[in-house]
Amino acid sequence: MEETTTRDHWWWRPGWRVGRSYYTWHILVEDQPAIHEFAQALQPELAATGVLGPIPLEWLHMTMQGVGFADEVSDEDLHAIAAAVSARVAAVGPVPVTLGPPVVDPEGVNLPVRRIEAVNAVRLAVRDGIADVWGTDRVSEAADRFRPHVSLAYSHSTGAPLAPIQNILAQHTTEIPVVVNRVSLIDINRDNGIYWWRLIQHASL
Figure 1 (cartoon, rainbow, N blue to C red):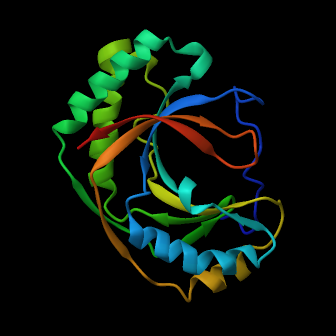
Figure 2 (figure 1 turned 90 degrees about the horizontal axis):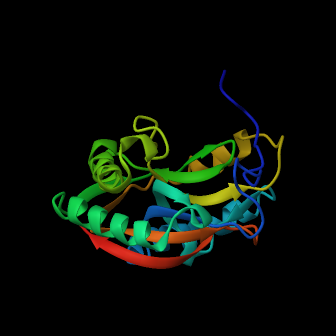
């Protein structure tokens, strides 16, 4: 059954707690001005709904593949994974994709990727790099449940109707072509009501 109301995005997922961070690979978009321009134009409308919190431009990202909680990954393993993933993704090459138009789901508004198979090839290379160090059994997350997107805003309330947000988005039909040139290993935290991170390493495609 299709959900028709918002859900607070900021519920505590398993394993997370205040002060705990997580190593993960994301596609960061600080070098994609077209995404920033679109987000900057749309986010005031999203904020005006009263149920969405726009994501600051510097924290826009595409979630890719988790590694593990920082307190459970040794420095030695992290360095080995970074090297293995870098070698794997270098063989993929730059990936052209199209983002948008924006859509809403219960937990927020995002720009979906229109060439999922292209980004999935990058994610599979990242997973293979992690498996090179830890074996396939320790690679987190399902290989086949990947829904690549760049979130623009997260819901901070539960039970608000989605229809007014859908009406806003219906006026924004832009599709944004971008080329993904790298993935980034980050140490991500969510203590302050937003995702923020420390960059560890970029890996070029």
